Image (cartoon, rainbow, N blue to C red; front, side, top):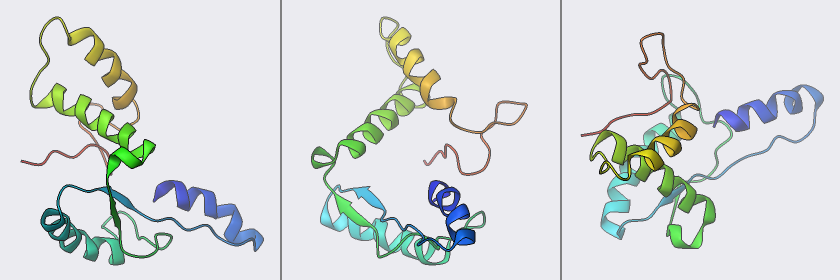
Length: 125
């Protein structure tokens, strides 16, 4: 969402056509996907406290990540984050996960106490 807003700022003022995006979500099962779709449709259509979704079109699409390279990349990043916060890696694996996490976590905004801010990393039970 933020990338589309940033990309469209000069476009809107210059009169060029704006660019829109489609949200792709990793598919689990049809039943689970339907539950997720129901939960996010309101946010998708109305935005959140932080942002509106004026540049996202259509309902989100559920895809199998094995067919989408960027979905595979997101799966890899999510797996590394999960290993750090939920199931710490074994001592012999720690260095590789630390390297991956330094690449990933630097992209999230944090306050002076190291707490994540805004739209960054969210923890769900």
